[in-house]
Image 1 (tube, one colour):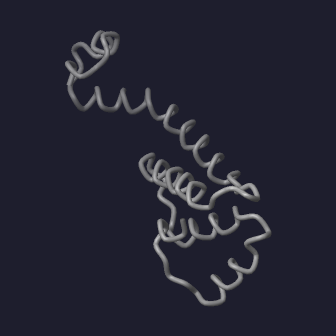
Image 2: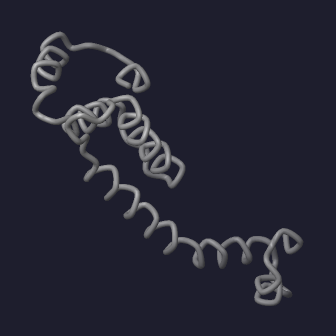
Length: 113
């Protein structure tokens, strides 16, 4: 385990057993992960498609944020993600969103792109 660490970390963990090392490393990096989750969720929830912009790249960017949150231990339900994507579209997509919701379309996230 010590061989995979940056040079400073082995010095901090000399003499520790693996269990204690893992606990200490978790404490060190938990705060960083919390900040990263906050930043990614903020970006996801504030993302809006500008009128005239392409939908595909916009949806893929949002999917990237969702996947990042899942990797950080905060997975979102697919239905919530679809709702977030639909809400991020400008008013010009209002009819599309209404039809989508009325017809209860069941699509994968990439199909929204």
